[in-house]
Every structure is written in C-alpha cells, then in structure tokens.
Image (cartoon, rainbow over all chains, first blue to last red; front, side):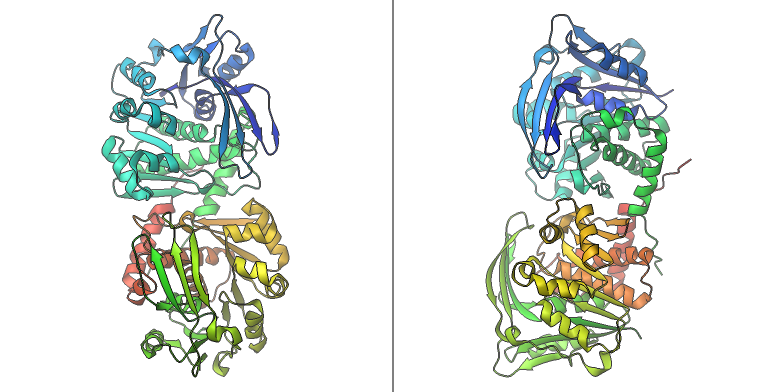
Length: 308
Length: 308
C-alpha cells in the first residue's frame, strides 16, 4: 500500500465567523490534510506535536480514520498549539486573534521508521527548518514532495523557505502569497518565477475562485464549486492539499494529466470542509458524497465544443 | 442567415492603464459586442448614435466586419459619447475620469426594418428605457434577448431596469453588480434572486476569475485564461457578450448545454480583447487564433477522472 507522510500542526482552533463562534476545537494543518487523505486507500502517518492537554478523543478520531499517530509526540505538562481567528463578512479575509505556539516552539519532528520510505510527503504549513528535518529523515528521495507554506514564513524565514523550496516538487500557496513571494502581480509570471525557485509544479489557491496548476507552459484551472454559503473556510487549503496528495499517492501517477484529477479531488474535498465549523464536516464525510460532488464538478466545468 | 440586433454605445474612449495611455479611440458597448459577434457567420445590425465628429473610418471598420450600420444615427453638429477612465495597478478597478453623454442624452434607437425579426437581441449597457424601446420595435418576441447592464443603472434607474429585466432571457453582469442588485453576498443566492426578477439565465462575470452561468439549479463555470499581462480590460465584458450571443445566433441552439459553449466562446474572445488597447486586438483577430485558443481553453479546464 502506498505510504503518505504528513507533517504539520495538530492544534486547537477557536473560530469566529458571521455564522457563529466556537470554543477550542480540533484543528491544525496535519489534521485537515490527514482527514482529506484518509479518503484514499493508503497508509498515512501524521508527524506532529501536542501537549498533555490534548484530548484523547481527538487522537482516537485520527486513528479511527486509519491515520498512524505514532509520530505525534505528546509533551507531558506541555500545552497544545492554539490559534484563534475571526473571519470578516466576506469570508475571504480574517484577523488572527491569538497564536500560542506552546509545544510547537520546540518541535523536533520524528518520522516513524515504517514511514521513512513513503512515496509521497506533504510538508504542511510549519517553520521551513522543521519541514527540512522531515525530508532529511526520509531514506530515499520520495517520489513526490508537496510543500504548503504561507506569508508568515516569507516574512520571518525567507532564506529557510528557499532552502526547502529547492527540495520539493509541488508547492501550494494562495494568490496573495504567490504575489508576495515573487513581486509579480500576474499569476502566470509569478508561477514561472516560483518554478525557477525549485518546484516543478505550482498550485495557486484562489479560495472561492478555484485553483490553478502550473507546470512549465501548461496550466490547469479548477474552479471552486459555487456554494450557497461558506460557513467556515478554516482548513480548506489544507484539505485541498490532503485530497491532492492522497489521490496522487493512491494512483501512483504523477503525470500532469493525473495531477489535474488530483486538483479536482482537492477542490472537491475542500468544498465540503467549508460547510461546517472546523473538521466537523470532514469527520463524517462519506465516499458516496464525494463521488456525487465529483459529478457536480464535471457538470460545472466540462463542455463539448466541436472544433471543425 | 440568423439575424442579431445589438443596441449600445458607439463611442470615443480615452484610456489610461499602467502600460500607457491613449487619446480618443474607438470604443463603446455596441462596438465591442459587434466586433466579437462578427466572428460568426450571421447578419448583424448595430443600433446606436454618434455625432458628426465621429470618423468615417470607424464606421467603415464596422461595415468591413459585415456589421450593418444603417441603425447608427449620425447627429449633425452633435458630439459623440465620450468616456475616459484610468485603471489601477491591479487592473481590476478603475476610476472614471470623464463621461460626456453628448448625443447619447437624447438617443431614440431605431431598429432597421430588415432586422425587426431578428432571432437574438443584445441590449448593451444603456439606459433601461432605451433598451425597452428596442424590444418594443421587434415584430415578434425574439428567440433570445441578452441584457447587459451595470451598477450605474441600479443607482439611477432601478425601476426601469426591473421592467427590462422582466422581458429578457439572459442577463450578464459582474459579481459586484449581482451583489448590489440582490443584497446577497453568495453568488449562488444572488443568481437565484435575479432569476426571480425575470432572466432565466444569469451570467455573472468575474473578470480574471472567469464567468458563471446559472439556470435554475444548473451552474457552469468558465475560468478566464490566465494571462501573462492584461493590457487594457476595456470592452472585455462587451466582447464576452458579443461572443456569447454570436455563437448562440449562429448555432440557433439555446439549450443550457450549448450555452456552456457560448460562455466558452465569450471568454475566449474576451481573452484577446484585453491584450491591446481598445478595439485594436479585435480589429485584427483571425479565426485561426480563436480556434487555437479554444483548444487552450479545453486543456485548461477538461479532465478525465474515471468515476468507478
């Protein structure tokens, strides 16, 4: 069975949207990536760190989804990473209210031995040095390394970020981050500059406007499914990355044509994630629902122009 | 041969973008709609008004594209409608610098007799009362009426706009206008409310993020082709409408499935329009170029997921 390694936060989130607010609930990049990838019949390990305040039921939830949690360190008397944010009315922007690094401040990831030959590695949003440490632990160069990052690391650890970018195949970032990283407004030009920094494949996430996949001169555009309401965008980008990587791991085919499908799977899973607070929708998502929504994506985008 | 009637401005534009600025050049909604529709083998009439300051060479240009200009009134000693605008650096927003209505202020459109049985009518952006007057001149209810409008009429002539909306089949507006018209942020909900105002088909244009076509519970999403640079967005929306209506007029098939193709044609033509100032790119656009770009649109959007 294909093995997938995910490094990223497993965390508490407290979220406020125009629709309501939560107390501390399950969150974190590795959580969302894992829950999405769990829909493919592959062997998944999450590498992360939490404190002893982290509820056993959350760990049990991940285990139940067949995510190996032996790489999630539990720091005695430590506190779990906590993020709190408030979304604006347009749901496209948010303010961070609280960031408590806690145990994440001294996180030394350890990839479980059984997973050091994984064919796909997803480097969830974390300090680039932590991401590099995971790559260094792999026995061979993985077939595909997917990097997710954000503007925070561009501001605070740009040199390290460039180091990790040199060693990854795919980067997923949002449109504003692509512009910040390259100083280019045009996403076509930005993607070309990011190619030159390392990643052969560049995925630019545009939220409600979909996602673009660039590879050399090839482009693929997966729209987001138009939704009646976006309840909580938290984790949508990670869910996208998890669906993308999970599909590629399952199929074992990393051609550009198959990567288009992976983008569609990522978009499909992300379209569910935003329907409820936090991980709630993803916890109970059934494969039949995914299948049905993939058909909606086909109807949404496919056309039959006959070119004479 | 199918007949298409277009009413809209034929005008002077002066445009400033980050790439440069123009003196008074050929512009206007009917001009862009006509130049796009001219790529289909149909019989087109433009209904508009200009002043005696309007250069004969511009009229000749339209005639050369097989656009019947007998419905373009030339007002002796009158001045042609003039619009001037300046685009911001992101090219998604602009300031209007000058609007001189001139002869447009007293425009009474007259549809040439030969065109009063046209099967498709495009009501380009104009006062809703002028748009209604065109509909009243048609001998029979056209097979399809396409309405383009903008926020200006929502602010200044909302009641009249609602009257014309009741009599059209398709409306094309941009995302902000859809939100303004309905008070809904979600475009899915906005489209549903606009349906209830009259149009069975709602096209929401999102500029660089593509266009959505809604019809009852059906949705189609045509992304915009990612471009290295957008040189001048002026006329892109009108070009979209012209391509959309031209394709439907040519094929005579107004099913939802064929309307998807019409949206793709509209998007394809609009992707050329923005490459040069004003009408420059559209004046010299060849059918082979359109054909090639349609193939790019296919590669951009089509995927082959096998659903088990």
